Length: 348
Image (cartoon, rainbow, N blue to C red; front, side):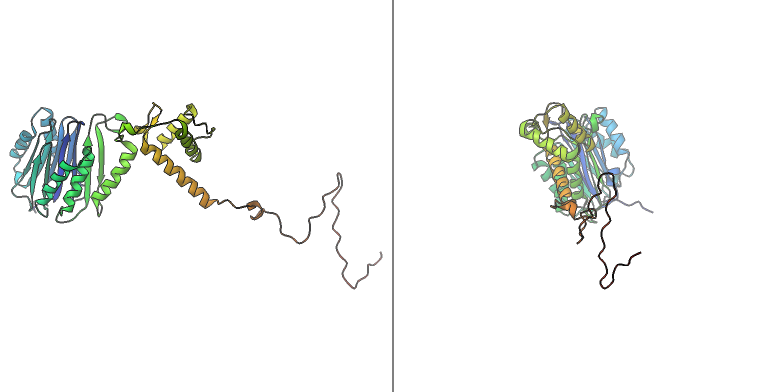
């Protein structure tokens, strides 16, 4: 029984100025991020697809690590592979040189485009405009590598993408100490394994990932935590239960500690700073959370005048007055009951 060939489009690319290498991919195939993308910081990036040879990933990266060019790696990997006619491969090396290969037996349309610092490849596509659209989008989109790779995926889908439809997508970008707490080089590593519109879902997930883990904002936009900003942060932290001090408009130790706790509980460790400055995205998130909490309190516990008199424990609504209090040291007098009409009191 012949093995299935998976229709896929991908892009491998490098941004040498920023020190970033990455892969973006979409396919009508479950969990494409587990198969196609491979990347190592300052080594290169690889996409292996069609009848994907997953060994191209580690073997190709090892060759790149030894200093072989992207073109040499593509040539050597495919030459040694008896099923090369069913393979598709894209490689970018540490110097930004790119190369690609499309086997003669890949399902139409299958092809690739190689440009400066990138290679786009795809199979079972609507036509050559898919890979050309990816290339144009990557070259014309401003910003860093994640933004440009996502733009390339969107452009490919607008040109028709995979003829069979959409299912999964992935984005992998590496840079030095870009991972969580600077513990790895996996700067962006997100996947959508099964979704009706995986590229749009990938972009949605990336926005959350970016907000929480990445510091991609322009340092010129950093906000000083002082004056009105400090007072606002204190008030919002108080609303969320992180701060209980006075609203002093001064960034003191108590406020800094409360803010640090907020960052930690909301997974903003990668955006924590010790210079009295904050990223605008963090302050916006704090403001949104505080406003949401204020709305929640107002809707679930609205302010009602004389509320204590209206609940179960409120003042009794009786037509008869309460009995007078007891005299000190004595019992309270019994209320006098009116005599029934028509009956006289009998003597004992």
